[in-house]
Length: 108
Image: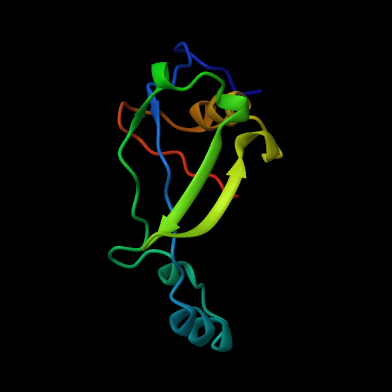
């Protein structure tokens, strides 16, 4: 069992979108190679400005939207997450040290 040595806290939240280079992904898959590079190219994960935790009333029910050039692309709530935020932070911080400014990205 993993234990947490420091109190858990989240100082802020943000929105992000991750891009996939489908051409690179398809080529790597066809060759039986890992395709992580298709997710890790320069500019592949732009993020919003940080939203201070004090500005968020309920992390478990936070509506998140994403617009690109004024067009709505995503609209969801953290209430739809399979695992709530607190257990995710607890698990990850039991495996690695989380530092101020680290980003913990989850799927939608």
